[in-house]
Image (tube, rainbow, N blue to C red; front, side):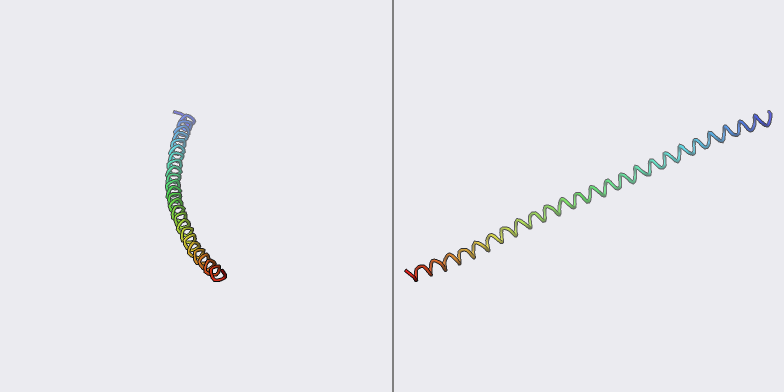
Length: 92
């Protein structure tokens, strides 16, 4: 075989190996990106779940505070009404 033929075959073999390595690297990068995306998605899901739970807790606490406020206001209003009634009776 001539040197040119040997050189051509070596170049072809080298090109083929470079393509294989390039494809392998591309596949590895894709797998890494997929894994990273899945981990990020899982973290996002966990954060959304936590936010939902916190939102429910906050909503429940607001309702409790509103109820307590309404109860306190009702007690106060009752006392004021009683005082007004007593004052009116004294003036009658």
